[in-house]
Length: 405
Image (cartoon, rainbow, N blue to C red; front, side, top):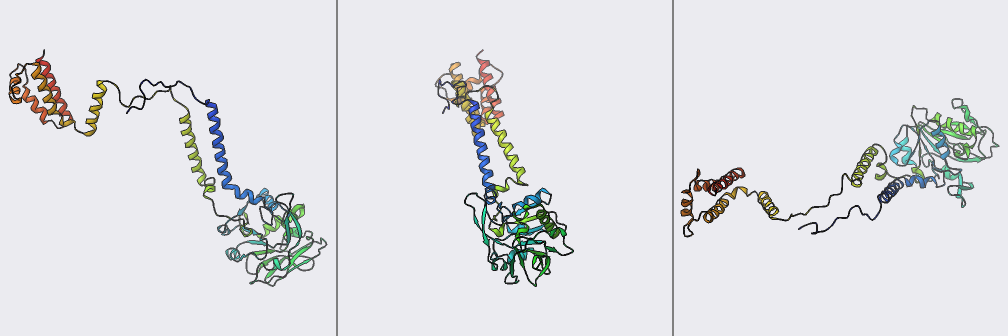
């Protein structure tokens, strides 16, 4: 049936909204969609950075975001580890568990033989009610809390004492910039499994190396956290400490947050915005922009839709011929066309009505002309190919025209 009503008029350029309004709505919608996709992919990172605690994303006094930003500014290429698969790296990995009860056995096993720094917890904190991401120090953790970090394999008693801000004592093969004022109070450990690298004035181990491994224990986190590196000497000592531990030719360092409960798997949505899939995302975006541009911008004047079936005898004949052609039956129409020419010839040339078809064909053959009707009708009957059928039909039509001149 027709797709266009008879006599229906197509409006000329009348639209409900102006083109600029439609373009603005599309732009705002696409921008909002892209923003929601990006926020969905990176929201965990943003929310984690506002949480307080001793981890690399925290801006609280006990956090380590300061050393992350400092090492990034001086070209040490720091990064965050959010999944256990990130432990498999030759870079220095700094772990900052919040309590000694955190199970780090799997982490130590994965890092054995590679440069690793484990920072013991020290402070008990409570969230600041006035400023999100800050904490209030309520005191020291019980000494048995950080002491349990390597148990039961390694016994590591923890001691706290007043330091009087007296300088620490690094070993002679350790950077002497670590001879900074000791934290107040200073937290140290004593263990036969640790080789002392930095001690306090009482001989307690502040920085030690686990025997026969590249795993280092920093007993006092105030040498590395945001509160500790607020002074330039302490900040310089923190960088030298990390460089000393990372002296294995590695190109960077990584701060683990999985032991702080901030790890997560790789998001498929986030993969779309990171190499190597970022190139595919950009290509798809460019293709969609081109498709949208083609849909919005019209080339040439608007053309109203035409009828599916045109009016008139010619259109009816054309449609019938198209149906026959699609059915593949053109070659079987020769005999029927010959019969149609016979009936017209009987009327035109006055063939007696009582004659049979064979007798009528004989009558038509006796008419003057260069071709015989029976021969032309036989050629049309035998035609099976469209080209042969067309040639036979044209011959019959020419025969009729000759006889009526």
